Length: 127
Image (cartoon, rainbow, N blue to C red; front, side):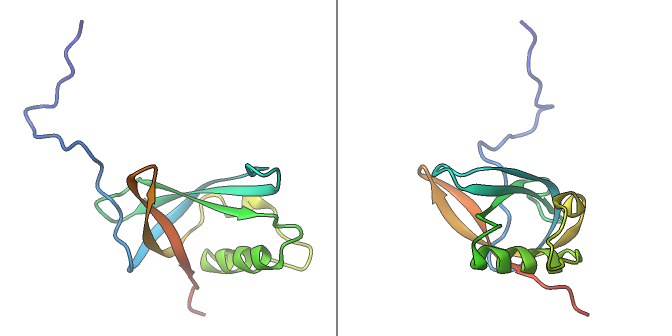
């Protein structure tokens, strides 16, 4: 059986985590329409961290019931403004988000006993 070589370097058992409470650069890797666990329409957005020791780490953010929930519509509008995508009264094609970059602030969270990160806020682009 072939040997897995770590090139003589010490290898940690966890990946570096993105910092919390400070602006972090990200790029939108994907945005897919699906269904929440409760059967509601939901967009799942994959955000790739850039420019930290956690470069390339994925953060997933969710927008539930975008067609009917006013709070979600406001959140999507803020997300769009943070990455420079214009949203009109008729909405926006989710494909326009892919590859766009912006800044966000993360917060710490725990999922199944493991430390994770969640989006706390998207920072609006300065005009």
